[in-house]
Image (cartoon, rainbow, N blue to C red; front, side, top):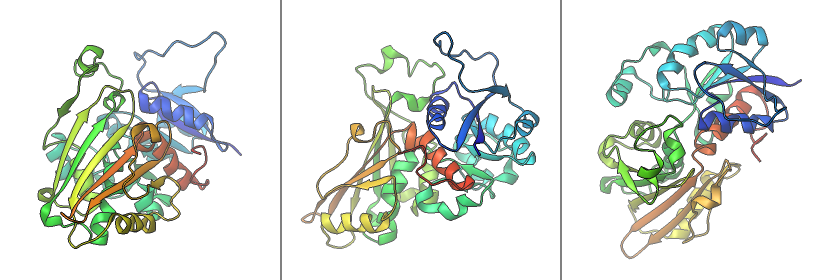
Length: 335
């Protein structure tokens, strides 16, 4: 039997990507929930019908028999909508930052706003399957990770867990993202004339994704430096992560550590020592690719982590989480 999945915010970049992935899924069909009547659809050819649309209410979603609802909405809207869908017995996968942090105080510190659904923070499963698969399977609320933290945590946490990195020397993450990561809402910063033939850093030392990395990597704030940068491409994230080794090692040993940590993981790919991925390697896929370069003479190491911010960094990972909570093969619709 085909299950139904609702998508709120289907006109945005992540939402549109999500609908496209769900259209290819063998066990789930998308239903579009109209949340903002003033939003304009993209033009479609004559005769193109597309998925069914219903009003964005818990009552309409329950009457339609939705098994899950994806919220591709600003965090304020997610906090407002989530309790109603949960009360109607519908699972929620939230692509905003509303439920990623575990305390309202941490949310207030980084997002400068009070949390309006604080009681759900402890319940929400953090949707990074490579780390939290078991808790995701039984969850009714999944907080889909941010795009930058997905690539960062998949690269950094094994360094911390294995004890390879000297945390007293700190870890630096230099992260570059395509413009779609800023969303579809127009702004001066993401307009064509500002972005094209340009390269800019933003949110230095206070990027909102920093606490997500700290919460899931095992690092403290003083041990982590993060800089986000905007590059003039549509999609993709590439993070260059710098560390110092605690003891003498080799690139082959670091690669072996990653291979053991991600053995059997369908969406993490590890490169040969000295080889690193680029954005073209992962574009329009749900893969996160990781490569290692290490200099034994100085103890300096570089990890390059690449993903598509709209797929593994958003919609693809959301479907990966949906597959887990609804009992489908984890790779369904994604390979």
